[in-house]
Amino acid sequence: MTFALFFLGEYANMILMSAMTVILFLGGWMSPFNIEPFTWIPGPIWFAVKIALVLFCFLWVRATFPRYRYDQLMRLGWKVFLPFSLLWVIITAAVLIWMGWLPK
Image 1: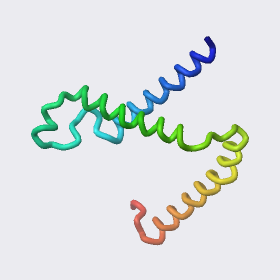
Image 2 (image 1 turned 180 degrees about the horizontal axis):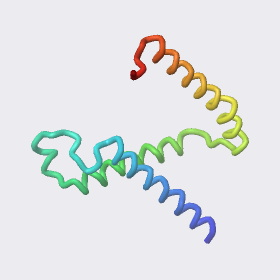
Image 3 (image 1 turned 135 degrees about the vertical axis):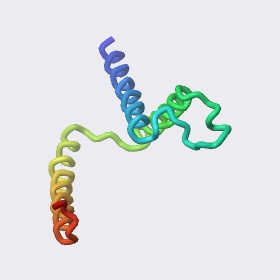
């Protein structure tokens, strides 16, 4: 029973993240094209179709790529992503100052 709840929570999280991705980046319930046959389909159906497509991508990536152990994720985050992020912040600040794009 514990595994079933864990599994259910994991998939509920993926559905929620798919819905948030659709709302924030894919136009939510709006039609992707503003031409006549696409506007006939109601908004909730577009929303469900977009969620299904994003969820399919989540599942596809999850099934395709290998899973990392916790120690590998921590090493990746601290030794790769953190220095890369700090370097990118420094590069962005330098470009803003060098190009004169800072707000006055």
